[in-house]
Every structure is written in structure tokens, then in C-alpha cells.
Image (cartoon, rainbow, N blue to C red):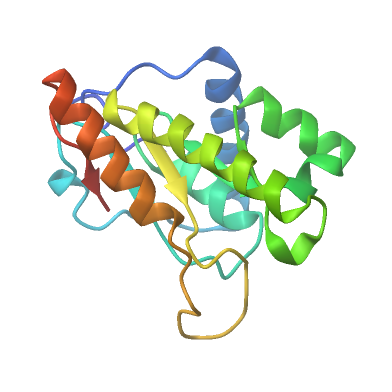
Length: 177
């Protein structure tokens, strides 16, 4: 299942590890779901980085569906505790998922968490400024409510920093979807 516009969207070619995972995820989604459609994919910007922001009702299925259906490569941000699950950790490292230190996980001290997340924002902003695509779930958790819960500020900070860097470098400005 490849979007008709995937070939026309100018994005860097994802690494082999990402493409193999995507192929596997497409295989799984074809088994689980009868049809997946992306509405208005022709309106995705053709240049500049993209920051996909979405709610997160279905845990690990959400990133899998996004990888399977969206054009180009995606870099995800995910809670750091997922990296403690052996098989999942290996897959996430393989496709370059970036860890987020969340307060509710209690893994790092406040200072360590702030330092790690500042570095994460810099890393993701640099990717977006250079025309890459990232996906972030700004609620900071998956949930079953039918409404959005309080959003964290990371997505806005990433976009603002990416915009600043793109303008300074004379590159196309990033977009938010």
C-alpha cells in the first residue's frame, strides 16, 4: 500500500532498516485492516521538513500505521521506558526512534530529564530543519478518551527551533501536519 503521491513528495530516502520495517508493517496492516486511506495527502507540502502531530489512542499501533501509510521516512519520539523491552528496543533503535524522558516514568532525575529532553528537541529540530519528517504525540501518553488531553510543549518547541534553523540556513521552512 503506497500512496500515489509518495513518488512525487521530495523526501530523503529512508535507510534500509526503516524500509524493511515499513514493509513488515504494511504486511501487518493489510492483514488487520481492510483499507487505509490518507485523506488529502496531495496537500502535504512538497518541500521543507514536516512535523506530524497526532493524538495517541492506540499505543504501538499508531506509529506502525503512520510508518506503513505515510510517504517518506519518519523519526518518532517515544517514551524512554519502551527501550527497556528487549525486542521492541531493538526495533526502535533500528528505525532511529528517539527517547523522551517523561516525568511520570520516574526513571531520571528532574535535571537529567531536562537535559535529555533539551538534547532531544535539538536533535528533532535539526532533522525537521533539514527537510526530514518526524512524528510526535504531544499528549505524552496513549489513552482511550475520545478527546485530547493536556498537551506538552515539546512539539511547539521543536517546530519553532526547526523554523529558526531553516531560515538561518536558507532552507524551506518546516510545516506542521
